Image 1 (spheres, rainbow, N blue to C red):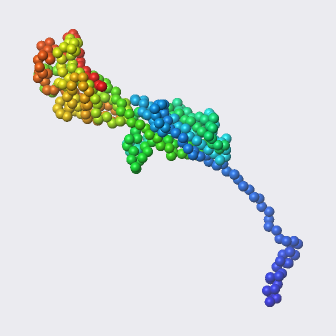
Image 2: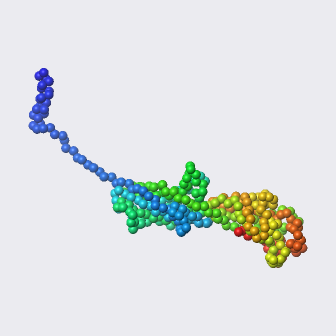
Image 3: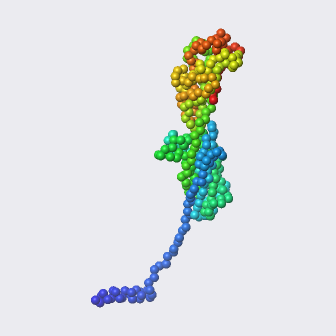
Length: 334
C-alpha cells in the first residue's frame, strides 16, 4: 500500500523538485514549402487549314504538295498566367506540338513542329475568354500534312480516330502540361497526273494485237487508291488528213487495260471516238512518287477495218523517218 501510494502521488512532486518547475519539451521549427504547380492544357480548341470550305477539325489535301495545319489551344497554371510562356515562343522548348497517325496502314507517322522550319506558335494577346491563370496560343504547322498521308476513311471501332494532335507546354519553372485528346480528320482526295506519250512505232496493217511502244504513265498526286481511270479516245487522223475526213485509225481499233496481259483482249476496254470510258485494273496506290502504266493495243488488225477508213498505200498513221506529216500518236486523258 505504501509503495503504491508513493508511485501514484509522489512522481509529479519529485519531477517538480528536480527541475524547479513544470517540465517543458524542447523548442522546434515549423516550415512549409510551396512547390510550383505544373501547367495544364485543358483544351485544344480546334484544328484547321487554309481552305475556307473546310469545317473545324477537318484538313483538306493539297494535290502533290503539303497542307498547312493550324492549332489553337488553351493552357493554364495555378501559379498564375505569368508562369506560362510568353512571346516570342521557342518551338521545341516552350511548346512542343505534333500531329500523329496511328492507323492501320503503315505504322505510326508523326510530324513534330520545329522552329528550324516555317512552323511557329504565338500567344493570343487579347484572349477575352481567358481567366487569370490562362493563356491562349495559336500555332502554324507549315507544310505538315503531305498529300499522300492516310485519310480517315479506314476508321473502325478499334481505331476510330486516325489523326491526333498533341500539345505540351513548359512553364517558367520547367514543368510541363500535356494534352493529346484532340482528333481531326484528314480528307481523301483522288488526284492524278498523266504523262501522255502513247505511241506505236513500225506497226503493220496486217499485224495482229499490236501493243503500244510507249504507254501512258499515271502518277498519284492524292491519297486515294485508284483502280479506274476515265479515258476519252479520239480517232487518229494525222497531219495529212483533216479530222473531218474518213482517213483515220478509228478509236474502236484501240483497247487498253491497267495490267499487262489483257490490253488486247477482254476485260480490256475498247474505245469509242469522243467517249469517256473507264479503264480498269490500274492498281495505283498512294505514297511518295507512286505511278502505274496504262497499256494499249491495236486490235485485231488495221486491215480488218473498211478500206475507206485507211490509206494503207501511203499511210500517214505510221511514224517513219523523213516522211512529212507523220507523227507518233497519242490519246487524251479526260
